[in-house]
Image: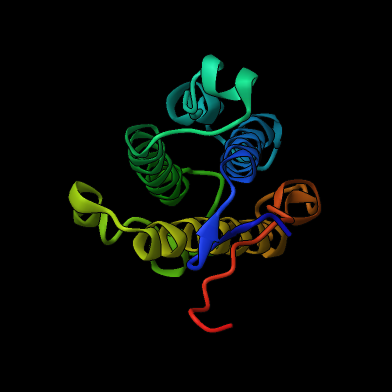
Length: 164
């Protein structure tokens, strides 16, 4: 597990974690575009994450709060955009994705003055949201692929406990 917790954050591990989240979300969108059970084929074009930028990714040693705030805003916005798009996709009729998975990003206001505890909670919310989304995609009868969770769940976690 990366050294990312409410007790402290190793900056290199933070970059690794946000890079993994970006890779996961972008992979889900690309997979949705390729899935023959999903009608729309522009998930990646509309909702792929651009952040963190190339400099942060190539250096891999750390990132400032501004980078993290921008990343979280983009991740929450794009995640919820994908959820809304899945709800409107004509090929998917069995599950209301928004009711089941759109909890990511409910507290965007915290980012104006984010503290370490809020950051860890936000990262854990994104990781949990990805896992919920991939499980629903795998279980949905209209979606043809059943390897979303195996391919795109973020395997690393954050320690969101405040004790020891």
